[in-house]
Amino acid sequence: RLFLADLGGSERINQSKANTNIKGDHIRAAGTVTWEEYYADRERLAETANINRGLFALKKCIDALNDREQAVLDGRPLPYIPYQDSRLTMLLSSALGGDSKTVVVVTASMEPRHAVETIQTLRFGERCANVANKTDMTARQLQQVLEALDAEIAATEALVQKHERWEMRRVVRQDVVEGVVEAEEFVTTTVLVGAEEHREHLEKLLQRRRELLGEVDPEAESSATGADTTEGKEGDGAPAQ
Image (cartoon, rainbow, N blue to C red; front, side, top):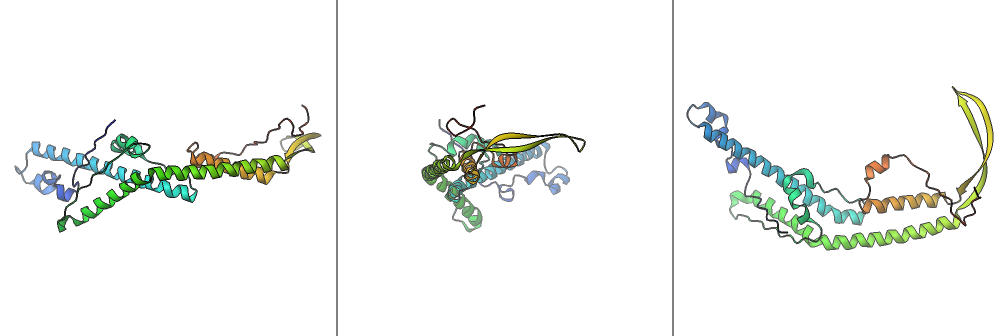
């Protein structure tokens, strides 16, 4: 598939003059502007605002894509890319990442009166170039981080198997009704002990791996209540049920 997107020229209101015929002074001057001219310029002004929103959303996506490489190096979860913020970024989402080949052409003026826009345009082009030039590098760095993480996970699992053991314990079970203990009994149960710190570290490593792969939402995961992940295995000395 081939995508061609023309992002237009200057969309500054004071330069494009999109609001020329809808300013208050012109409207109050009877006969200066026809209703046809008024509605035409109002439509043009709305189009200018939509283009500016699309360009702003594209800038946010480019900045987030550039932040991905640093996130991998820092060991942070990959940042969210807000493609859905505008139709423009949704259209270009497949062209900004993956195996696509993207070319961004920026045009600028040497006239001093356009200096501010020229500098902003060149900086935007530079950020786009960083995404295109570092896509493969980011993928390789992510693969290296995952390989190192997998090695640490395997080593931690070995420590868990080495130190973990089944232990018999007597616990007290009470039936409490309205704050009064009505029944009490001692029960013998079995629990896994000896590798609590290693298992906690293993859970953090597995969580980190899921975040890097984008399989979980870090905020949702952190707010979820903890669950017992200990399981008995054959050969671990667990008593027959």
